[in-house]
Amino acid sequence: MNSSMIGKIEKARRYAEEPDRAQIRQLNVKFEGEHDTYHVSFDDGEWSCDCHSFSALQLGTCSHIMAMERLLSGLTLAETANAAG
Image 1 (cartoon, helix red, strand yellow):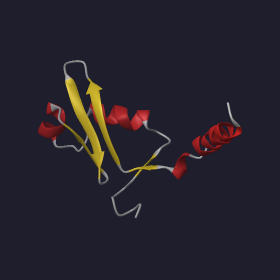
Image 2: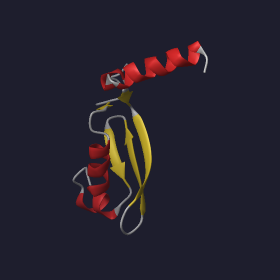
Image 3: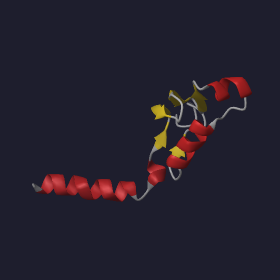
């Protein structure tokens, strides 16, 4: 492995130790639920899911979104598209 790649690996390791360097602005996920496969997305500070619970209950969340929030804990989600500039 050349020294340039070693330097990049070390830099990536340092960046990964500082998760506030990255802010997720958009995310699209294929989520395998117990009964079906769902599309979960995060865009412009808003979560969305195409499951029945999300649309019917109008709570702004569902078990799939809550699971994604747990999976992404420690990472910064953009509050709005304008928040990150």
